[in-house]
Image (cartoon, rainbow, N blue to C red; front, top):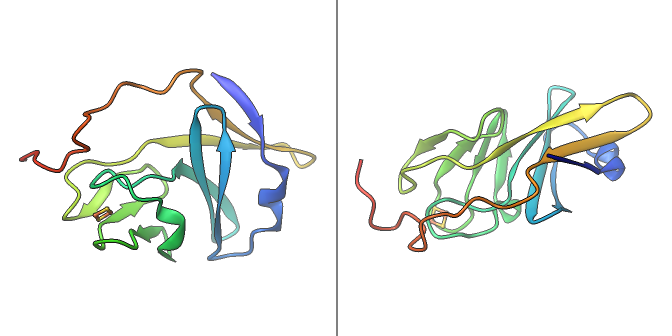
Length: 118
Ligand code: FES
């Protein structure tokens, strides 16, 4: 794991989210009820960035087809996505905020889950 500083995430207010490059990942950091959560900024359905979507409570909605994901753990909550997205640990020491990401991105289905069945 590598620890990537994301101190600008401190500026996020409740209900806001923003993308941050973290190593090989594009990470979406969301603030909900005062706490920061981090997930990969990439919908598991057709690889669309999620930061153009909507954050409501703990749920981010993909701007393209409306799949929903829980920002606390990346679990998918509605079709058309059939799989979740990666979630990352956020460390907030008070002085600094970091996201812990793997050094390498895992190999994923090149079709992006489009034809996966349950
Ligand atoms: S690309 Fe996100 S729901 Fe289709």
